[in-house]
Length: 138
Image 1: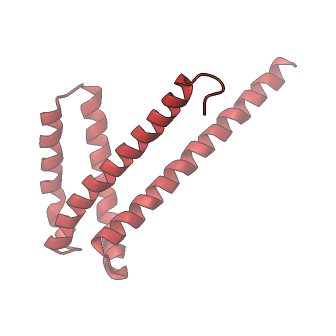
Image 2: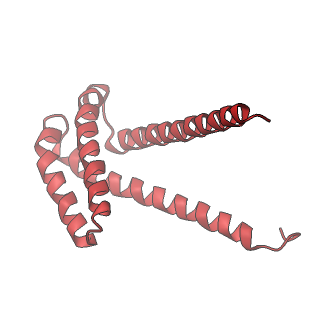
C-alpha cells in the first residue's frame, strides 16, 4: 500500500469517527432537550422562548466548567460559580417561564446530570468487567 493510500484511509477513518462522535453528541443533546421539556412541562410558546435563553446559559456553564477544570479549582469554588451563574441567568429565565418552572429546571438539570453520570459509570464498569473475565467465561 502506498503512503498516499494509507493517509487517505487514515483520513476516512478519522472523519468517520468524528461523524459518529458528533451524531452521538447530537442524540444526547436531543434526549436532554426532550427530558427538560417534559420535566418542565413547557408549552410550545414557552419552549420557543425558553430554549434560546437556556442555550446562552448552557454555553456559559460549559465554558465556566471547562476553565475551572483547566485551573484545577476546588469543588466548592465550582459550586459557588455555578450558583452565581444561576443567579445571573434567573431574571432572563423568569421572563419566559415561571418561578416554579425555574426551580424545576434546577432540579431537572441535576437529575439529568446524575442519570448521565450513572449511565457512564455503568458502561465503564461493564466494559472493564468484560476485560477482566477469562476467555470462556460468560
